[in-house]
Length: 306
Image 1 (spheres, helix red, strand yellow):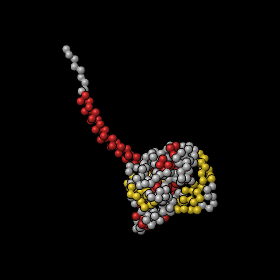
Image 2 (cartoon, rainbow, N blue to C red):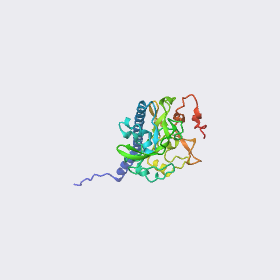
Image 3 (cartoon, helix red, strand yellow):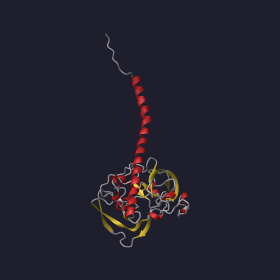
């Protein structure tokens, strides 16, 4: 009696493989979108908690936003509100995976100033696994007296070298010659529409200026320094095609990325312009109340010396 050997034919195997390939092509983008959405949700939660930390800080310090009087990591605005956080993990943006080790060499001789990312260095004092991913609104042009800080001359101990204790580690830093002084909450004309903090591609101390909101490979002719390129190399620093932002009244929301070139010229390349990034640049301005077109901000700060 002849035995029957059951097996798949080559045609059947090819059909099964083709079906699996088609399903994978359909499902992988869905999985990627779900992963991006989860990261965006986590990031939005982070900025909400950070905003509440800053608001609690202000409640204990004469209704005033945090000031930055030190350089580098020790001068980051979120450094000063750490006692009000339940976890330092909220300072890490899940969409930004930049390690301090990857920045140690390219940032050591950055033209904007030396950074010290080696373990135990000023900008990596506690061996952080990742660079923080959220910046504070100190203006669209970095401490330009339009955001939530104002320049305050430091005549007592400018550039003095001091030691700051960070989680049990002593870090040597320098006092700023010009303190970035936080303004009072009462000076914000429209808290519900004025940015407080959000996703950034910056370095300590982190901000929300146009330069820091530029994603990797921004096609405007802007040329990053080696340090900036390294900082933007591992992830775009933006959340699912946009930015998670918190406002001065404590609420947070996601803003779609706007790649439109601004008229805010990048100082490192006189022929290039950074993106507007967020839909409405008026949201930077503490003095903007929604009714007065201060600095004609909706046109890209055209009256701001640009």
